[in-house]
Length: 368
Image (cartoon, rainbow, N blue to C red; front, side):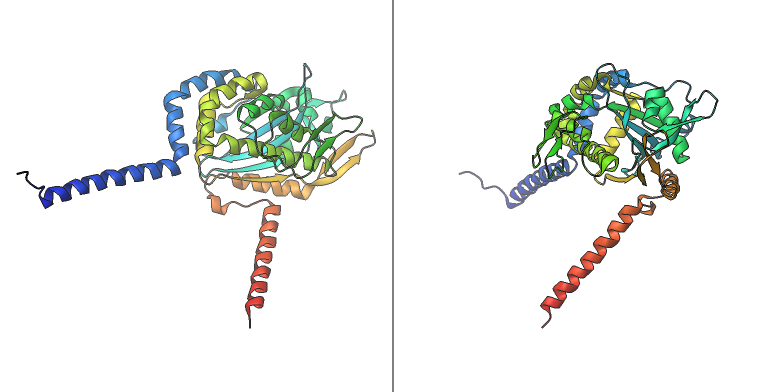
């Protein structure tokens, strides 16, 4: 006659099974909520060395420019990056259609992006007139005159703030990258029709779930809305944010080597491959990544005596932006202590007032 399992042995068996099940459930739950971290671990294990080699072609330090300040700071400290979006076609030199002074705070996943309209009237550092006087022109021309070096120096003078690093991106290179990523989401609510006689002809249809590389690039290049340079700059910010959002998806990690190959020579920076990898992992893994943007305010597009159109920056806003940058570069400030661009503070006040009004209306309706 078979002996029956003792109650104590049965109890131990079920406790063991329960422990295993709890471990599996816990591991699965942690894996789901930390899937970006797990993907990062897989990246370190299988892709890191491969990516570093591919990024070597993009590493292009600026000649004659020292970065001693960066060398003296910790890797998690805030730093300033000038992002240059260049619309370069065929063999032309190109101009920096997009100039964004970006403060990156790796420790808290926050970024401040100050967009400079391309037609902003500025002193071009490194270029002078025949009589030795400063050369004043549209800030977009700095890149055409002296590449990333002159752009960095000109922006530093405009804001009175240093630039630690630069990154130049030729938007043409993004077309195939976006297609390889499966498209990106863009908030296009009305068809974008570019059909002016002096402009490239195209139409971007509104209401698509995802936009391919060609449509996304045309979204950046669209020039015929009433907002002019301000609206174009806003679209550039949305475009870059959309790419970051798509890149942060777990499924994109394994595509990184392919995407770098596609970008090829359309991307250059003085961030080393190791710095880029660490920064990208830190920013894309954080669950609280926040990007605050501001477009430099100014006095529309005014003609000068020579007949050219320029955008004249508002001096008060320039001062405010300088103070904003200084605070964001302060490693002692926490994320909650950081000042925000004026429009964010205004929107917060409007939203709070709207919420209060709605609550009052609901309370009033509910009253007997």
